[in-house]
Image (cartoon, rainbow, N blue to C red; front, side):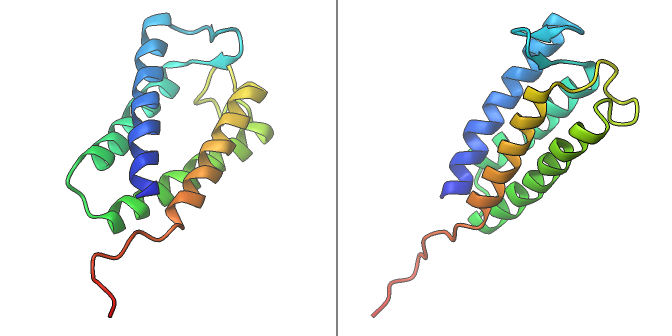
Length: 125
């Protein structure tokens, strides 16, 4: 259940962030968050996937697995952002420290909620 809620909330937020990023172009959002075209597309795709899983009729095991994979990806992006801020040229303006912290937080939180077992639908005697 925690993974489904995470997928719903984070999915919608990432979609909104991707749309705002596309509307604003290549500048910092609120002066702290990098928005580049590649970043916006990734936010739309990962947000769409999470929202689809969170609001869809997908079983909890699948939701937890995908949230875990997305968490690993965001965690790696957060770590790489400190080492290679432009992600090998994919992000022209480079990640800010705030971007990296957000990616790390999303990744860690996703891994935590993916590891929380769902409620069993069978009754125990």
